[in-house]
Image (cartoon, rainbow, N blue to C red; front, side, top):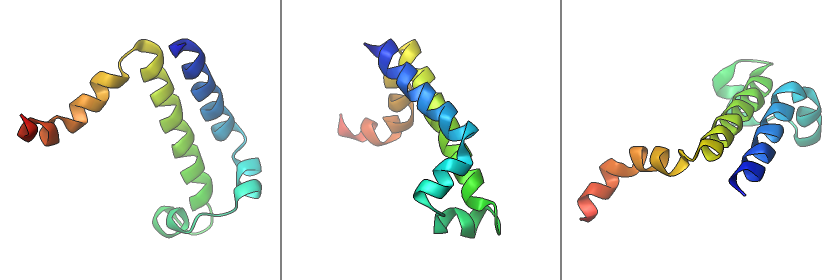
Length: 82
C-alpha cells in the first residue's frame, strides 16, 4: 500500500514540476510566492518547489522513513511531553 501511495505522490510531484504552466493557468498566481520569490516568475518557482517537496515526501513514504523523518523534526516538541 505504501508503494502505491508513494507512486501517486511522486507522479503528482513530477507532473507539478514538468507542467507548471498548466497548473499556473488552472489555479492562478499565488500572492505569497509572487511577493517572496520574485517579480513575475515567483508562482512558477513556488509550484516547482512544491512539486519537489511532494516528490521528497513520496520517496520518504516509499522507503518507510516518513515516521522517522517526522519524529526527527517533532522531537524537540515531544520531549517535554514525557
